[in-house]
Figure 1 (cartoon, helix red, strand yellow):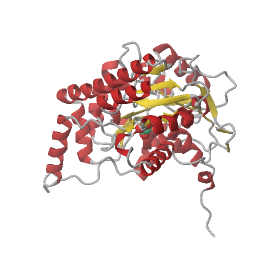
Figure 2: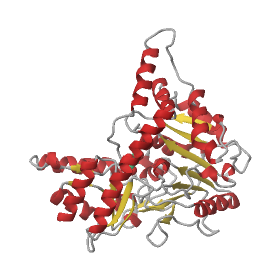
Figure 3: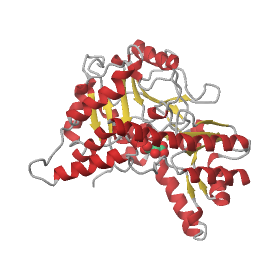
Figure 4: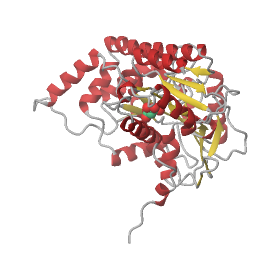
Length: 409
Ligand code: MLT
């Protein structure tokens, strides 16, 4: 008889956002009279339509696909040159970050890249994650059998190094001591879920640590478009020495509204080599060549349009709109007496739940009493207990209404 992958059976519960969606659906079914009142600020899904330049590019690319002379079949698995070059020209060169087009691997999004990247590391690699953390890094390593066993009483995996993100360290931890024994570090800044940023000094510390200890950093920069503080780096490659120790993952989801359109990319510099001198770039190219057939042509043309002058203007307006929502939520919560952070360089607001409540208790309370959906901090890891995340990705009306209802509680 066949046997399923037992690493999957060790995963606790559902994927976080599927679990939250199921709870909200059950509530709506049990309370049909309240269902239309629900304000959803849980999963970080955008709500503004695609920018006009992006829509025009999509239409034009669809027309090309309808004509035998301009039709495109399989895309190059690492992405079309026009997009890889536009990425380097706009996302890295102006910041003095050295990245070359052949180090850019276009994909169907940051979620799949951040889940798949672990495949190019040895199976006995010890990973380190922030706590709380975007669950994909941890779940994907647990699926690969790299996390050990899960202890339900602590919420921790036995073989993972956790880096607690607390109010004391500004939710941006320093590198661990020399005996940490982890060699693959996942960092995400601006951070999901806390909305914290790593300033240049902190990020440089991480790069220096990784180079010194032969570690690699997977740097998730999906939210870089939300940085408003000019002193905060947008890319890890703005730090000296990052080309020998860092992989960076980017997304078009949050800066250009592509959550349903799907486009992202991963940078693996040629200078990043393992202990034997094997370039990770070549392994990632090999992995993508085997398992991925390229992001659709029409979507890559849409991505290219994001970098046009009009596309930049339009998508920046969208980001500014969401940041405006974040301010509404952040200020409203503070006026209501909540301790809240994030929201200034990120689309997420991280708040402390009232004393005596758990994250999930607060989730139920908000859903039942105010029909407002957020994400319990504990769902992102044990250090998230006592916290709660709200997103700024709804409409302005959603943000205002959520704040009104929370204040009325
Ligand atoms: C979130 O809510 O954390 C994000 O939507 C997750 C994602 O981008 O996959």
